[in-house]
Length: 325
Image (cartoon, rainbow, N blue to C red; front, side):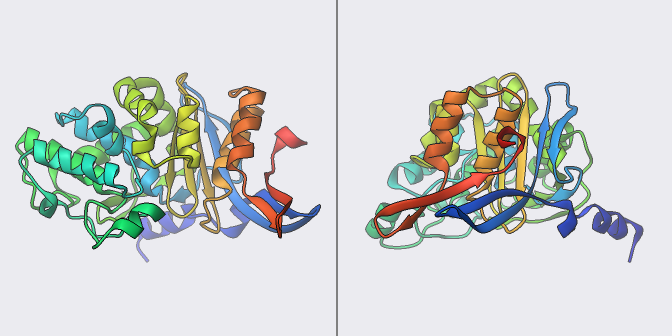
């Protein structure tokens, strides 16, 4: 094994690096636990709090899409409003989402054939019933890919290989991620959509989303004003964005939250289930007085999975942290 491989392996989380962060309670008894790692980083870039070991590497998955949008806009991509928001999004493939993607492509002289993401059915149940075929525009990362292509067209870069890790666009993405996270990328592999996926520590991811939310106000405003375009309606990250926080999910249990002041939270759930991650992030904000108690209560009530017995609610998912001690 090479030295770089040994370093990477040593920084990858072990089971003992995770802590119990949430539990599912049915009729007063704990039915399931979730393990996770969480980090809160302040505006100065320093670690404020952690649950588990936040200096462990993870795949941040789609939680870094706002940083990828920083790269595309810095290269001149002409995106505004909902078009800019969906370039940061993991959308549900509704007709409205697909229309935004098509509009970005058409504005840059392209069509759906230029997208290199896979084809997919809509994630939204209603849109899925109405769909007649899988399309690239319906893939949840298609907004990001359309943003990539818009940047390439504007900057005069080739579009045929825009997902190549050595393409100038992807090198710019890498530069932005390293700068915002304050750490070097140690490993890269293709993400589910085909784009380069770079490892970060949980702490570095929190640092990056905090800086993004403080500094990149144009993109942040687009996300908060068009939260539905980033995901859908009534989803955890949409609810948080409608409350004034930047929030973005990532596959395999990743969730980030940023505040306008520059605080950043990153969560990774060990089993890859997303149901606990937003609650853990909310709890981290509450522990450090970064969210009002009433807003916290309202959001956690909407987001927490309910446990039912027939038509009765007998319990729910509860995050675990010092706020409850």
